[in-house]
Amino acid sequence: MGQICSIEEPGLRPQPLHGKALSERVAKLEDRRDTTESDFIILNQSSIKDVSPDDRNSLAKSWSVLSSRSTLYSENALEDRKSTSLGNEIGQANDARSQAQSLHPNKIFSCALDFEEYPETVSKFWIPIEKMTEIGKFNKTFVQNVKQIKEKGFGAWRKSRGDGNCYYRAVFLMYLENLFSFRYDYTETLWNLINFLENMDYEIPFTDFLDNKLKFIAYMKILMKVKESSYTDAFVEFKRVAQVRDFDLAMIATARLLAAYKIASNDPSIAPFIFEDQEMMIMQILTMGEEAEGIALLTLPISLGIQVIQYNFFDKVVEQKFPEENDSNFSPIFIIRRGGHYDILCKKSDLEAQNYDLKTGTYLLPL
Image (cartoon, rainbow, N blue to C red; front, top):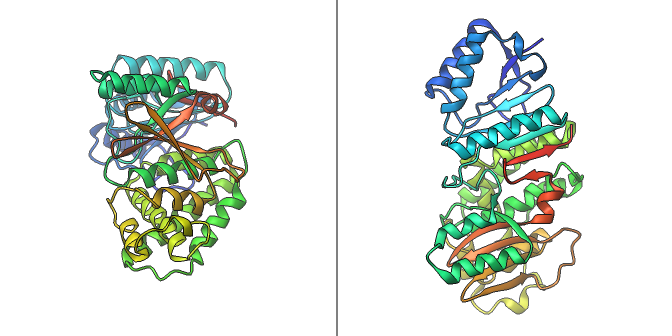
């Protein structure tokens, strides 16, 4: 039986909407006055014909005007959220997704493409690396640097909001997104992170950091409940939650705590790199909106047990590794620094491994 469902909070089971309730929801979506970041629609694709023509027309109209959208297709389900500005390129992407839907029984998770959109947190999708040249298309050195990045095997990038927290957001978000992979089981690593944060022996100097840490843990536990039933659903849910400003701020505060804790705990692995007052370094890291530099570029990766490879745009591209050696079982996280701003990079090989189509902004996910 075809159903249209609404989900108001992550992790909750969808509740069917019928008749008047369905019409009211469609009207609210169309009107855009009642939409929130957590609103999205699920259609039973195998029996969408059961939805009345009027409701289908209204729903289609609402999809075309909502302010931001990501979608999850399958042979049995279609999740649709709010969409960004729609142009010819987006229309072509939607047509390509529809074609892919008819060819593949797998789930297809995608985001409507808007390359000009300034992110609330990070870009919803991977952007072709060539698009980066548009930032400084009249600067020959910048364009040449982008070309060098492409020659190193990078195929895409994602923007991180430029609010002084861009480094912590870029690194920690990609770390978490990798752990919520639909391809591998990192359940133990995720629980180790949660348990470490819960038992962190550190007198946090600011109460708002403690509040944000607890909020981050709560979000993580909700996501872990989703992961218990489906790695794919957990990946999709994480991608959605990553766009929620409340989660984003909690995540950044937690990343800063982890970076500061590595200094406060007098870890011998970073002792050779501490050249100034320890308390001053900690306070700098724990200042929201303060750009990451110096010791923070090392302490966050070490705290997470990963390596971050950073590409700096100067007269040419300069590569830096934090730490220098990668002793972990995880692939490095790649970021790019332009001036004092950080964004995220992705290798072409990783895009292929994730079954991601740059042209349509689409993941082909396992059922």
